Image (tube, rainbow, N blue to C red; front, side, top):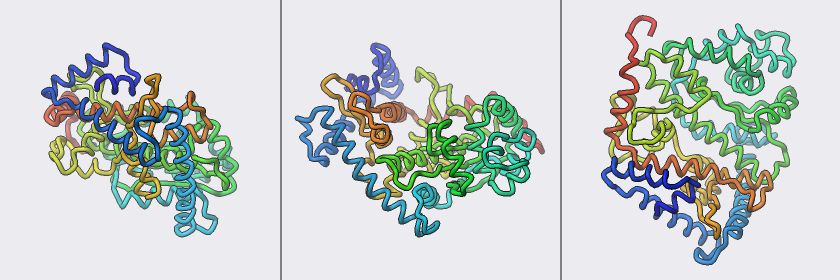
Length: 416
């Protein structure tokens, strides 16, 4: 069973076996690797049967093409649903990206996040205005641009195109932040469709290579305009990007709230803007533990053991995160096939994985990849997180978070 996980993850031996042995020892030899391997086998066999394939007599290439056809069919149904949402909630134009923005907003269900105040961001950017954005949108001044462009729309775009010098100024600003600069607010989701933004879209796509832009510290997301006649898979890929963006915002928000007591609060915000936060004090892991993996673990524990971080953060701060394919299926029931497949793969005759992950398959479809060029990295990332999450011990996690914060506790004063 350990061999299956190692091959799906493309991990090197004997390092992978040694890592698992250490995890097993720390968890009291709970055999989580065996259970996870069995779960993967059961899921992939059930999915093959749903596709009308024989689990005992299907090649990797046959499976890949069946998954691509399934996604193409589901994507067509998704487009219809998104157009209906857009026409009903936005306007008669029924733009796909506006449908994605509206559907994503609906699934939030009023969940509050702990993020940077818009007023603080506006004042900061006045000192280093995003001039490339101003030029692209034909504004003569920063003040004029702010009257027409929400800061939640402006900042994610500026991060993509302004360049290294501007990002250095922005990073310096983030390091100065205090907890008082943050507030509870809803996630902001934008999908601009004015002529200026439609003309700007190509430049943004060329630079970012993404149809969804996210700013975690401000809790905002931008869904770029999609063509009226989209290529197969792009609607699914964009919705997956929006779901992933939501997760990044939820995870970051809980980390920001947790970090309020830390003396280096601003440095933590600056680091989180570019990289995923990590917990480094869990000694039995070979590498720092990503905060998203911690959140995945909390998601698994809902309704079971309670919240091991109660001493630091309330459970309500962590309930917004869900696996990407779960969020997609909540928005579009037509995508139910892909639920619980995020970390699942099947080995072909060469012991190379075929991914069941919806994002991997959408990427392969959009980019017209052949079987030998297929994407698998989203499934691998999800599988690694799933494996590690199963080995987290609540008592050790709570102690590790305390160890992370204790040396850096800030003195409570009027400024904090």
